[in-house]
Image (tube, rainbow, N blue to C red):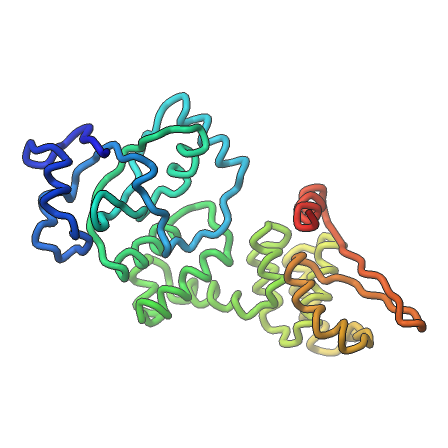
Length: 294
């Protein structure tokens, strides 16, 4: 059962408010004033995660650090939720605090109540996510694309909404044209947004992957990558030769590459036998691949 910790609206208990407004979940609801603005302790079991959450990866070590902080100091900033039917709520923002609280066995969490329909939920989740400082470039790009696709914003409208120059928005969106393996590499921190931007004008996916592997192998800077791409496009250096592989390998290779986040090397002998080699570029990368094989 949720209980009010402060700012009980109009001096009434939360249970009475919830009983009066069982279906209140839109910003236009006439009963909004009865509950909006309240900060209450909600039971974690009554809160659903945000289905519109654009963030799909939560660093486990950072989550444990946050959990330890919450254990010592409590939740300093309340999460934000919207009211659903009955005694149910849905996260708008604060999923890391929500997850960390569950991790240490907390039963309740302070929450700020607001009202929003599905479109407003999506927009708030995306914009709130974009404003974080620790987002990787692909996460930002995907959030921008969802705002364009699902809220029907133009790039100009989007730039105003998120407070960024239109050219900045465009540069992020262009990253989504890169091969998925490069996008994964950017998300995992193996290459920077600068490296990604340098490879955007390389049309062939195989060429992109060859350059990506060279960046990792030789630790190329962004400037060196730009020069490499320029020489490749001008014909100053030869394009890497493509290996001939049978159809049953070729048809599955892209899926395997995307799964491991690297260009997997396949070698075949004359008798049809072969082997798969998976490259890694650090201890962290090795452990990531090892976990995928479990």
